[in-house]
Length: 240
Image 1 (cartoon, helix red, strand yellow):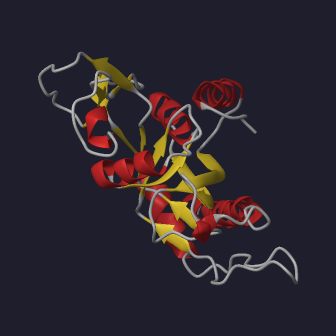
Image 2: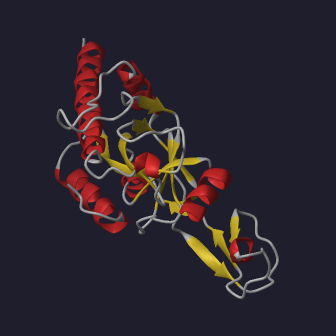
Image 3: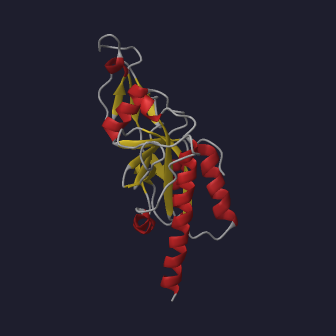
């Protein structure tokens, strides 16, 4: 239970790793969706996550950078044009890991072995109803191989959500996952992430029911618990 945002999440994982002999980190939680193909209650198991709240502000009319940029003028209304807010350029992270030189990295990988184990969960039955009154129109599903983003903001802006999906192919947004994966990578400990979809970042009628949003947490927990069972079985087989 890390609390919200990246600093709390990273510190909590580091405390656990310093205190206990941990074989792997299994992280679960809720997220906003940036991908229209994801529905409320679905659980995403990403294979990459990134810090999309890490960027530098560039001077007005400065030269284009190497990495992805967001130009505020592209969002001027009623017409696009110049904007004195200029541009922000997204930046990579400096990854310091065990027995390896410092590496600048943007996309943080999920441990492939753990991800492969998780693919056995694709037929898991997720909860569709809160009670007899409140039910999702479709049965939730587990979705593999998408990309997730993390930032110290609660994303409630449709235009920015669409930008992240278009430029980075990001499907879920949250405030902790990348910090947990970064800390795990730094310590050489494998990590996997499960994120239940609780809303559409920026708001939309399709994912607006607050009475059903709790299913995101319930389903993410269910997938995580079943994964831990599979992980234990794999460990027993490998020890024999």
